[in-house]
Image (cartoon, rainbow, N blue to C red):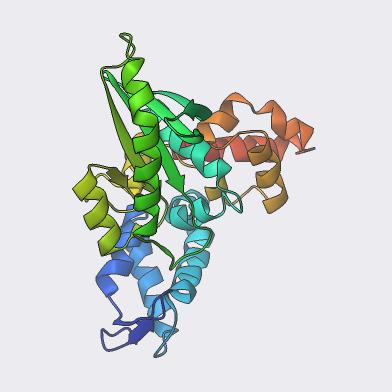
Length: 280
């Protein structure tokens, strides 16, 4: 029986009280109907036991949702899908670049800038409204890891090295510069405090509140191909290796599915899934 008295185990090992509302909210966010949500909540509730992990609850809800509506299941697994962009951080950098590109930025990935002391390879450079944004991406391949204060300390020092040469080169292409730190997980309180103190723009899974990575992805319908419930792991890696990170990029480069030997019928189902996600 579903009850708030259950305590569950988060990925960090922390014990917290189970929240029916959070489970309902995450399912509703996927686009599932109220009827489907209540059915899944009831089914998951019947299988709860004290100390069950949030991962296990997610897996059970995901499996039930997938049986009901695979597209909603794809959207439901967004956070996990971002982790699947690993093990290297490069696909995540491409993903961040894509999100910014479709937000009106001019972006470049992996550019080398000369600093006062040494040269630096910058993950993403994005220009908009006269500001050149120097963006560093911190990717974590598993849940429970947070971006600690050492990361903004390091990013800020790199930015302070490249800023003086950039200031000398202002030629109408940009009027100002700013440093960003983007992570797919969360920031520790010290990381937030230091980053905000020195003027870094911080973007994480749920920060800034209401405009974090999750909200931007949903608002722009910029889902990574790793959300797909139809593509195999091998197929996802093949596409990521060819810099196809977003669902809308696969729609434009659907010929790559032919290279994978995907049958025409399955190809159409995959493309339908991609197109539906881009319209949800």
